Image (cartoon, rainbow, N blue to C red; front, side, top):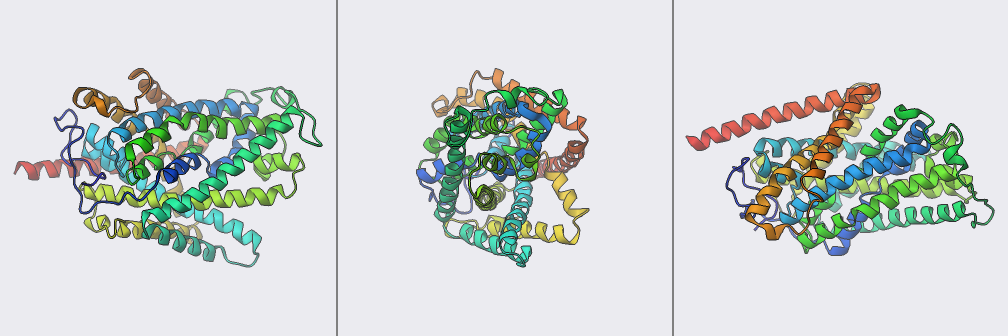
Amino acid sequence: MSRTTAPVDSTPGDSTPVDSPTTADAPLTHGLKQRHLSMIALGGVIGAGLFVGSGKAIAAAGPSIILAYAISGALVMLVMRMLGEMAAANPASGSFSVHAERAIGPWAGFTAGWSFWFLMCVAVGLEGMGAAAIMSSWLPGTPEWAWVALFMVMFCGTNLAAVKNFGEFEFWFAALKVGAIVLFLGIGVLAIAGVLPGTDSPGLGNLTGHGGFMPQGTEGLIVGLLASVFAYGGLETVTIAAAESEHPVKGVAKAVRTAMWRIAIFYVGSMAVVVTLLPWTHESVVAKGPYVATLDFLGIPAAGQIMNVVVLVALLSAMNANIYGASRMACSLVARGQGPKALGTISGGVPRVAVLTSSVFGFVCVVLSYWRPNDIFAWLLNMIGAIILVVWFFIAVSQLLLRRRLEREAPEKLVVRMWLYPYLTWVALAGMTAVFVLMAREADTRLQLYYTGGLTLVLAVVGILRQKLAAGKTAA
């Protein structure tokens, strides 16, 4: 029996048991070990956005970036807890798409699933270009497109093979990222305490000086908050991977339960170290990135090259994980009758057609960035701008509905429980709505909101029409 699907005829309020058996053309393998899943969960919170993109957020918010990351981190923890509750009760490679279909209806699963697939595919192209730029800087004269092609072939190959290969790559990528961030935090704490050789404790001078804790006021905090929200994208992959692990329920439960300290230490902790040690106005924070700037400020030898290696690893890890996530989501959607049947072909326990399709789309995005950098690719980027928020919204609504059904039909499956249900679920929904409103207020994010809204609306309309057509055929 496959764990990848949900009943195609489930509708809100139907009597379908939450643990009813489901089927697919062929089952995916359970080749991921617990160590793979644990490290995927651990490394999933450490992306290139944290190492590079946080510089602009610090420049906008100043020391209050600590507060921005704490607020957005709290929202993400609520989302992950909700997703963990549903994933532990019903492990599925379609993850939140399956849960949305069960809770709201097939159109919701269709919309959430294909929007996420589109996000993953475009992101693969972005990460490939970022990694290629680093390689070209190390080896001048080598064309970036060649590096992108090499990376795409390499990770397409690992995902075409057994799922344990994906898990092994992610295990070591995550281990390197975790090691780097822990080392950075260790050095930072020693420097703040004044015990690092050659440094004096900065005290609270950088937190309260240079304009104060909120030098740009609430507007700066809002910009930092919006930047930090999207830096957390990628955590959802662990619930997709859990369906192919040795012990899906145990694995996802453990991953979700440790999400709080991971977010607190890696994101909030590292931002606190950066703005405590380095004045937020320091020009190198944006030019070099906050981590390189901090290590250079402390006089750590070869800091720039060390962090470039870490960023490269983070980008390659994201490419690998996004091809995996996109292919599993596509496979799950097809198995539930929500896409072209060819994409659902499984060979040797791997959805190889879905892997190839997802990889090709990522490479097409790279080609578009060279052919039409000023319009088509920018258009694609705007469309994926707020997709992760749309996904989170579906997660929250699904959990709100499915929790009641689980308590009624299968309470023993609630091995992970959302805190203070339903109150914190409503708090999370209110938080997401607030982020949407803030995006509409800011010129830089307003266009992304419109484009993402347009894509979501189109997918929702197509999903509703498909659902009505399927219902009509069933009735006939």
